[in-house]
Every structure is written in structure tokens, then in C-alpha cells.
Image (cartoon, rainbow, N blue to C red; front, top):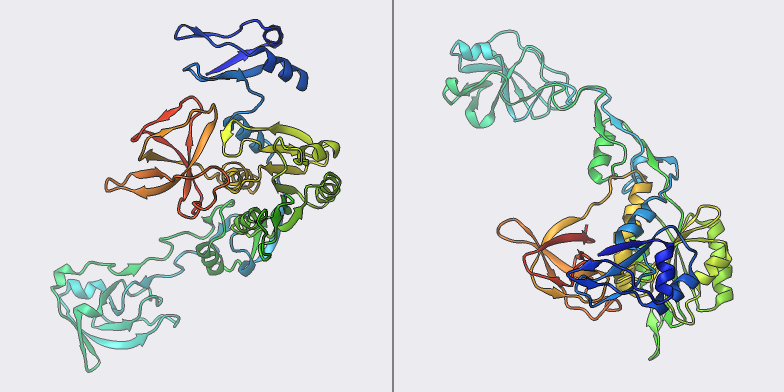
Length: 464
């Protein structure tokens, strides 16, 4: 339950007075010491949000944004990075910035859809079933005409039909010998115009084949080639640097000691960006404030987007927020009412560069990338947003913390053609070993603590 309060209520709370609304006969109290700390550490705004579980087990002032608020803030910061022209063979997985138009009718001529003979339907109406084969025509050859109803053309699939021909009979319904073709089926079963793909039936010249904003797939490249579009206008990708932090993190090629870990967040993020044909740069920073500040300052001048993992929580060596503040980077929010990924920091620089600073645990990074960064990227590139789908929960879940919970799940289709989600047992946001066996996160709402089998919730897929 969300309770809005003005500044006077906050001040009363800081003085130890009760504020709130009655729900099921109980007041939701506000802890005065929390209010004092909260008021002392933040600028006063016209409205503040308070959160309480309806069961009364949790109460307190929350200095965090909700998942929905974070999403809204991030999407409001979408950017247009312009366009560029690429040779079509280099455009796979980029985002189309123009409509692809049919340069002529598709198909551009009447053509048979089967191999067989082409004839005039008037001959069938006259009861003629034996035809002299005038010529054999392959695809790509000039159309062959016929002069009488007693003639036919032996023709291959995809060849151009002459205007004097209006019906095609397939080989399976013929007997061919000595330069003649005899129809072996009942003539009444033959229809005028059968087995012909008519000119312009698919698209007319000037019609749109592919809309701007679509991701360029192999199918899109094939269509572009078919209309002679060898150069494609695409959305320019942002220049992105992927930054990992932490003294304990070493190169994947190195052998760790008993107290070290191999770095994985950077390669995971870099690989995800490759789905959009984005070649990002990779950087690792140790837990040294001066080094972090210096490198971030350089990155802000060189890149459009900084994707950082680690260094944003409450530890003594989490220097990223302080370094960004000293670089005049505006904090748009720090901390979301969610698990995993609660310490997520998001802001923008004076030069309008964006910083996504995720907590360092691999599952937190992975979830935040799919829940927040990818939708931002899609909007910035003019793509339709990847909306979540809905799935039926296959087991009960209890989650007491006052946080929106993103649980790892395995999606399946049941015999009733319903999408189902079965949770994967994990050991927290540092346990990334199950990301490969799961394929989505199920988003469980903040207002509940018990989630029952059979209930339907949003899921965010990451296996596509």
C-alpha cells in the first residue's frame, strides 16, 4: 500500500508523531529515527512515498523508487543517436531506419507454382486432353507463347508465363511421351488459373515491405536483396563502455587464489549487446577512488552510455556514486524496491551521457539489463518495446521482504498450450549458476508476500 504525505507529515514523523491511514483497523506507524535520517539526507520535495505491507509486518520510510517508477525514469531518458548507411551484408541485427519499398510488383510476372504444362483453359472447356508440347521453358527464360488450343508449354516452377496462357497442370496429373502431354485426371477437376502465382498478388509496386524500426534479420536481408536495396539506412548505435569493478575480480584467463573471483559481468553484458550488433569496449577498475573517478571522467567524454557493475552499494569500497557525484553526474535514482538489484544507480552527466550502475552480483546485473536497459535501448533505437509475457506459476512462493521480487524461472508450454513458469531454487543474487537452466525472470508484485500455484504473473524472457 502506498501512502502519500506532504512535508508537514514528514516533519511530524521526525518528531515522533503518528501518521498514516487505517487499514483493517490498524495504523501504519512511521519510525521517527528513520524519518529524521531520511529528512536529513535528502532534499525536501512536495510529495514522498511511504510503503507498508498490508499485514503490518513491515513499515518504514523507503528512500527508494518502485520498479514502475524506475522504468518510467529510465525510458524518459531515451536518446536518438541518429542514422547511418551500411552495406546490407554488414547490417545484420541492426535496426532499420527506413521503410523497405517494393520497387516493382511482387511477383513481377505471372508464374507457375508447380512443374508441368501451361495451356489455355479454353482447351479444357472443349474437352481437349492431349496437347503438343511446343517448347520447354525454364525459370529466367523469355516467356513462350502458344498459337492454338492444342498446344502447351512444358514449364518449370517460377518461370514467367506468357499472357496467352492461363492454367497450369502439374506433372503428377500428366502422361508425357513422344513430344505430347496427355492429362490423366478428370478434366472437370481442373480450374481456370490453377497453380499460378499472379503478378502483384503479394505486393504492388510502391507498397511497404518492411517497416522502419524492425530488427534486421536474415529474412529482412533477403527481402532487401530482392528489391535491390544493397545499402540500408539503420539507426546509429550508442557508443557503450562496459565497466566492472572490484579488487577481488580477476581476468577469466587467470588462476584465482582462494579469495578471488573471475570476472563474468563484463563478458555477459558485452555478449548481450552483440544481439544488437553493438561492439562495446570493456574496462575493469579496482576499488581505488582516484582511479575510479579518473577513468569515469574519461569514459564520460568518450562514450554515450556507461554500463557499470559493482561499487554502488553501502560498503566502504563502493566508490562509484561518490565519484559520479564529484563528476557532476545527476543521480536520477539510487536503489529500487526490488530483489535482486536493489542498489541500482541511474543518472546522467552534464553532457547528457547516461550511466547505468548495477550492483555487482551477476544475477542482479543480468536481471537489470533485461528489465531496464534493453527496453531503454529498444526505445532509443526506435524499436517496439519487448513487452513481458504472462505465465502461470507452477509452485507456491513466499517472499516476506517489502521488495518486488524477480525470481528465476523455467518457462514451458503445458498440454493446454499455456505458458507456465516453474521457479528455480537459488542461493541469492550471487548464485549465477542457474541462469543457463532458467530462461526468464518472473516479476512478483510488491503488495504481496504469498504467491500461489496457478496465479498468473509477468515474466521477462532472456532466451530470445
